[in-house]
Image (cartoon, rainbow, N blue to C red; front, top):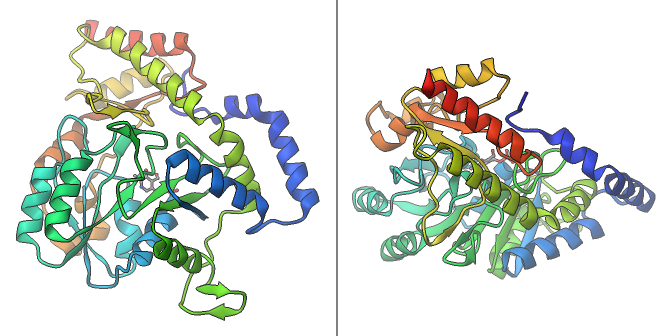
Length: 369
Ligand SMILES: Cc1ncc(COP(=O)(O)O)c(C=O)c1O
């Protein structure tokens, strides 16, 4: 039996330091906005290579607080890709910000800069662009920066799936005016519950984020804008500091397992494997293969006790919640075709080499039938 995600194994490894964290935080008696949060924010800012990091309640909150901190308001348009987790879009559309979609590059499943340029030429009023570093692979940032620069569009990165990924040697999250991260438990850097964060090099954006996450307070009892209660609590912050110290090793293990899948599946099966562009350092949040027999393969693997998932089966523009945007099948053909063929295989730092080999063997067996 190989699960698609397995968080219990990690808990077994971390039991002792987690118990120590629980004891330390509880004895300290400070649960919200204390020194554990400050320490994690400092460590995450250093890790990412930006001046400021701010913890919030989830990746979704990071997207909405970041978008509002960048000055987006109801009626503004934001361009992103339709093959993302719905939160990329919903976090802002809930505030009246209008999503506009742009198709993807078929190899990396990330924003196609040429498609972006076409969208920006035809759509007026696009204020921001959200490139999603999907599955752990960075977007083509130089071209996206160039296009957005020419159209006066602000870049806000969705780095929720790409902690530690590099574009041309530089961490994702450092290319936009701000970037959102999710620390959902299964992410490369995951908490033990919902959690998220923002990074920015801009002091004014950082201050706006800090106000928005804490009831619009500039200082205690001074509410200068309306805001939310979306704070990263002390327990989660302490857990994240512990796990940040293991992030690079975890990413390396993911890359090693991805190599095993490649060695075993390339040339042996017709499945399309994930690519790592020469300018990219992929952190394999997900290991996404592609095949027209996706559903049959998934079922065959389930029959052998191997879990798989589809990230994501329905592109956002075809979700019922976005019916009012008037999109139809065929509007974003590259993303739609990918959605019908992609399949995520198990890949996480506690997956063993033997398990990866057994998953690859099961995929090969499916095609040998
Ligand atoms: C690309 C992307 N954006 C946003 C989110 C939302 O993050 P969260 O689940 O922490 O709210 C996720 C999480 O699944 C994601 O993968």
